Image (cartoon, rainbow, N blue to C red; front, side, top):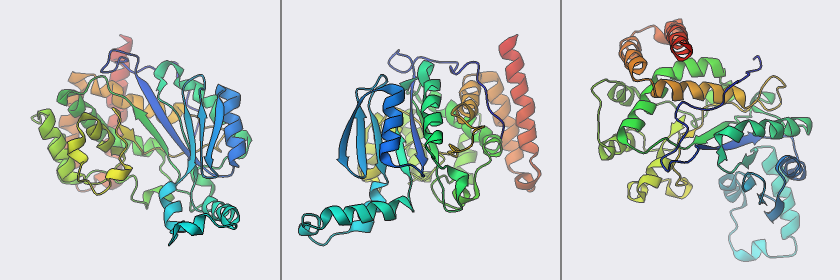
Length: 337
């Protein structure tokens, strides 16, 4: 993978639904570092004060861009501890047991750095954090067969209308195979459920020039076909932000964090690769932004993708990926004309 250089990190629509500069939250999953090293990298790059909640969970508050969180996977830890009574965690051996648990957990699950929502114009500053963590020994997706580590991007939206949601979803579905090929998704991540793609019925419903639902219908369609967080582009946090009623009875409600953003989960976290930076996954997401905001080209993509999607050999011949390259060249030429 060669280094991706971005001259312009800004999407075509850079104001959010509140009329402010759009922001992106980032989640980095990796292993190989002690929490003290990770916290030091955060404070070296962005300043701030460290608050320790437990040996599994920390916050770095009042940095130059907002508050960071550092944590091990809380759900996995809860299953590993599973105490039968409160005294288990209060006796004199609790600290020792907690330390042993941390050591065991670190061999199974990653540390996760959760950034605050950062203005798009400052997003590239996170590369300094990536570089610092790499120097401290951070290990990413490809460093071990068991590591299904990911990088999640949480961009807020230009607006919360049904038209905008449809355009972004259509753009993502049309470009999914092209993004997947360029991201070179790791084998460990392919076999986990966390980044499952959408099913055929939902794809064909949305990728249709006649699909023009109102907001309630769009949400109903999404929830009917996607009753899970395990999607490469998870809309449940966004739906919860629009109205909590939609997820009130959801089986994963406790894990759905309401926020006015997409939850884009597909990218690898290749943090230990010196040729990798945040510019790579962001540049691929920017293609979704560009296509979603080019109505004429999006219509061409939708029509051609819908036809291609039903070819028997499409999964093995990569013709659609090559066609995406051609159509995206047209997008570039239009933007420079």
